[in-house]
Image (tube, rainbow, N blue to C red):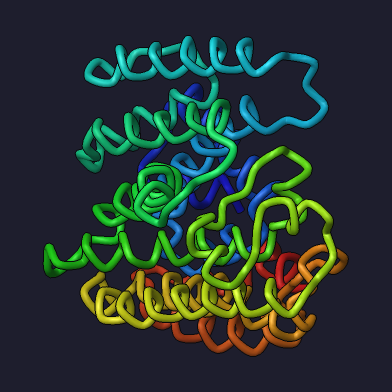
Length: 317
């Protein structure tokens, strides 16, 4: 499967192919829903999206590897060293880093701004020193770099017909991240972090100490409902932007929108108990969304494959 994608994208250099394949494996292993969505893209676009995911995942591993014996200061130093080297080589594209080879190639092919990667690395650094956010505006600084810029990086690859697509991509990226924060309240507490704005929680009588008790209360439920409403508002705002992308890319992003933002539906389905249960989008829902999208996507590809991708069958099941 990967070989066909790389051939379709015109990527034939052995070193480049090896790097792109590594990024694809990182995506497949760690980003199941994201990877499913990429399989709805034309094969010649997939490697570039895998590369961007590989960059984000590699940085995230430095920051959030719970098995790591490094201190936060040591992690910050490792992230800075890796990130600085990447940014220094941004223009030349010359690197021996196994992940960044593909990332820098993607950057050059699609003219992706350096500022997006600087913002992302800034947010990853924040994770090593900031454990809570007082206001939504404070949180937005982090979310812009950790999520919005991922969408902004992808937009050139998806060939927009209107520059307004970048604004809508920002909204959708933020919605994805906020949905994750709602689902992962319990997991984030294990890392010593709270991503729900404390002032907004306080409006419902919720404190960080209450969250740390990991016991659902009516106040916490109401606070989560408020956060869910914001996700849905951002999701709704973003929908017009999908129609501004190349037609062949629309099934991918539409599927990602439904499944990622569907996380908040799953939170409602577990009665908001994000401390003791994992909110997941059901297999039935994934099938109901992904299979029709797959059929639509194949019709839009310039050179559709004769059979369904093996990876697609595995991921949705």
